[in-house]
Image (cartoon, rainbow, N blue to C red):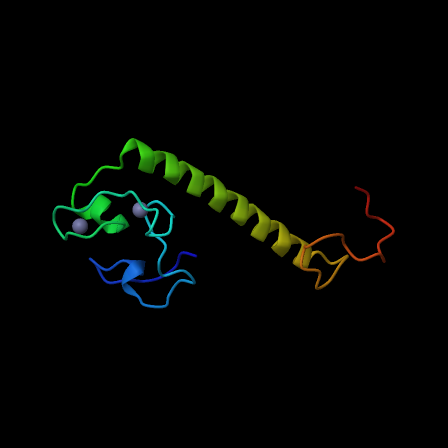
Length: 111
Ligand SMILES: [Zn+2]
Ligand SMILES: [Zn+2]
């Protein structure tokens, strides 16, 4: 979820407890046990997206693949969220969360 206003040099990963999985690498999206991101020569950490912006690091081939996968997953999640929001705002089914089948009381609905 975007929309945080962070001071310069600070990344979302600096905020403890901000994310459900604090042990998930923000660069490759894997648990740190499985993370293969290289160490940043400047701050000696790895898995910090800011290093790729501010410290001249480059995504390697493996990371680029991971990030494509993450983007696809994120896109799918966004679509699902959007669909749920659309369903929720649909006047035909007020309050429906978009999960499963819409309520029965809808004579106009055709699949
Ligand atoms: Zn990583
Ligand atoms: Zn760095």
